[in-house]
Image 1 (cartoon, rainbow over the protein chains, first blue to last red):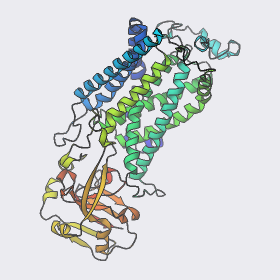
Image 2 (image 1 turned 45 degrees about the vertical axis):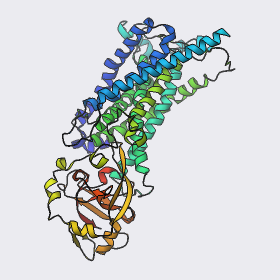
Image 3 (image 1 turned 90 degrees about the vertical axis):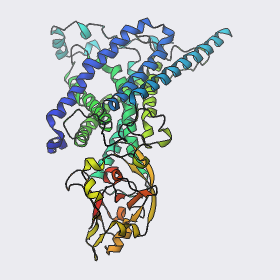
Image 4 (image 1 turned 120 degrees about the vertical axis):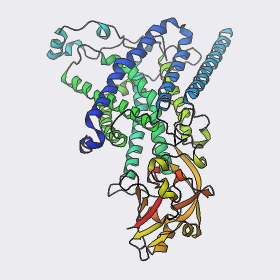
Length: 120
Length: 418
């Protein structure tokens, strides 16, 4: 707290506080209701057997979006090609593809082993 | 089987409700929206999920805090602190861990908030003075955690929609967050311990598909699937970014802000010569490297003098505070040889000064006695056998073991011995 005041030229307490509280409010009033709303709306429409895998896929995809957005939105510099050197949109799509492929394979493998167990 | 059907116990037994509580309840309660009775049916496993996620986050934030403090101390050393030049990979590991752990904490924090957010919407808003205090401490905890992760990933990705100085604000917020976290852990330890103690299954029955381990919640998702998804998300975002410092993973880390293979001479650059405003001075044929201060023979070396001096080679990483690192072979004069040439006393420290405008960020850096005496502390002229690219600090730069990149001063024009 003291640093905040002591170095107020650098930390700009008013803006600091705005971001500090704003992020909490943005989470509680926008992000959380959005996610919860999606879960409540889509949850019952998904067959129970697929809910687990779909939650895993959706949570991983959501996390990938959050981690991909900063480099997608970040400032590039004309004189520095080593800064944000990749195509992050393409990277995100690739990561989605791998994630959902893994979820599909996992679901299929589990369904097959369940069926075998049922046969016995 | 029994555990899934365990009744959810309310927080306060009816008999112990205080007068304050009664008065609060009589306030016309908004029975709408999220305050509606039963709007959030407590999930049977919420407490256990919260406990597991809490442990993971506690470890992650602990790692971030300690590695962050260390990095701060290296850059702004208090009098009692000195940072050894060996092992040469240590800062690379601690700072790589700082950034990777912070990124992995993003899905963990959001999962944790998802589990506990229903508890924020209670009526009355607080049951007792203690409960009110506990709730108020959640503001710095939640605000601080989100602030740390948002500013951290924003900064390394050059997405900086704020006006404050990132290092100053990130540092200040870290103390607020860790203080609130310690208080939170103290307040919740017994709750978490209780929740986890219930988990121990009496008898394992592996042949039976075990609904008891994971009773579905209101949205029909098991605790195991939910926690598994949070863990999977933490793992996936780590793999998707950690290649910026773990080179073998560079090609898989499609979301990493840096690629350790991309940059002039195959090494990334943080500050270019143009943005530092040194192109003209660095290309000037009249360039000289001066060695001054506490020396018997002050030196003034031209580029040819530097090239003629005994060449020392070292394999060292450039390690950025942003969490990326890249190893290369550097060649140049050992700082200790230069100091010996100038007749500096044994155990001398040195300030390495750049062509950058004095007083601007990272225009100079300090080598303490141990750092200056390390045989691999170089004033480098070449990178992988070629003259330095101007963005890597041509004509000569400091590269020494176990240091943050911001202290590997580029475009060096003077060494002041102390």
